[in-house]
Image 1 (tube, rainbow, N blue to C red):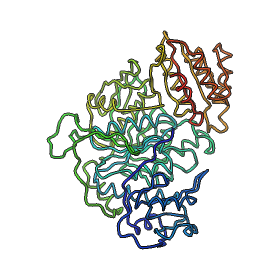
Image 2 (spheres, rainbow, N blue to C red):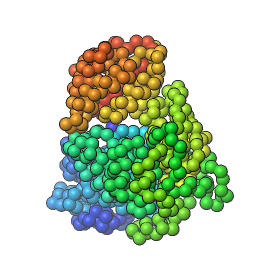
Image 3 (cartoon, rainbow, N blue to C red):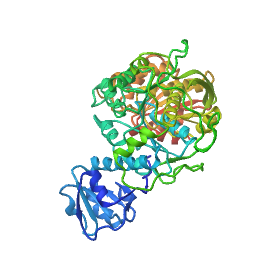
Image 4 (cartoon, one colour):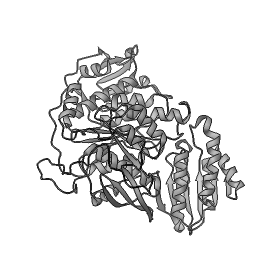
Length: 563
């Protein structure tokens, strides 16, 4: 299901739009007397006195909907050069070379303004081949325990979606957590050019979206964009267990590093090298220091109707106005949250183990886990209401990102409270349906890494008492690696102890063929609808069922058929 169209109250004067987008103003009708409010690229989200960007996509061209945008009340429209003639003579027009580039540029200007107003505003960028959404949700929930936090909703993680998230930032927010996806070469570089993170996380590097970027090496180069975008104050959060992530960080020559992962559990914990444990204080600067942060929480996400929780008010920023780069640099130099120099060179940190934020122990507990993590020179034990080791590793990354961004520690109670707010619909969500059937709804997307993680979770939750059933769809965008990765998945199906595997058609049949050769019962459906019918007919009381496939497969139809 598509993410709801976000709304926002970002305001701009006409000259500021032209300046930020390097555009030319063409006045049609009276010159606007008030700032336009709301920046959108979908006519369904147009409101009176808003700004409409005519973006060109694979199937639609926003220039074909200019009249509809004006009818909806848009007062400024941004079009590509030579297309202004199609705009009704009642609104102002800004002509630009490329509306997609301009869309990101205006978002970058708005983000810069927010940073100057908030004084301590920090942007966390999260990418990876698998687990980036879980890590994003965990990071946002943790930061919301400290101050109002805004974060990516749904799948708004590309060059169109990330600006939409940024435009929904409001002055009270102190943290912005952006999920960044990649399917094309140069896409992350383009996003980071305007998003400019303060903290950058690469969860892992696999072969997801390898098509068109040159295999796993190409994915590594593309994901490394978030590290390359860091300035001298930025912190790279690096998966110590992933050699490709470490290489990406080294190539980017990052200055400050925090590592996370499982590491060598038999080795003693190494000293934290990137910075000393952060000072411990509550959000209000007027309060005396306390042992750990225990109160305050606020979440927001882009779509209208997103979650919000009351929290203590953050100090207001300065009045709204144009923010220059000098302001941002001044804020970074003077703000108390600036990170001190590293005591250990990044290259040494990236070559060593175990990680700074380390999963020490994990015990399955219901549909989640009890985890013990060492971080910031201390050990925390919490219940993680998300199953599987992959989610526990994501939590180590989230804790590293939260502490790097906020310079504050959360106690175990605050961490568990934050985790209790996390919602991961379609991403490993476990539910019990009729006849005591456990369904793992992991239908949002699929790639080799997340497939293996999903099958491991199935094996863990089912244990020895439930029959294991996997309903799987094809993994898309793997390029030349597609056939080999699907064949290898057959071994993962066997290793997870799956008794019945149902395919939704396409290359997933290669996995079924290998699994069948090793004794697994398989059902080959030609479509997702047929797979849904087969699953509904063959699943038995007490079974544990994993449902997973790439987004375009529509595997959520199987979950609906089982309910």
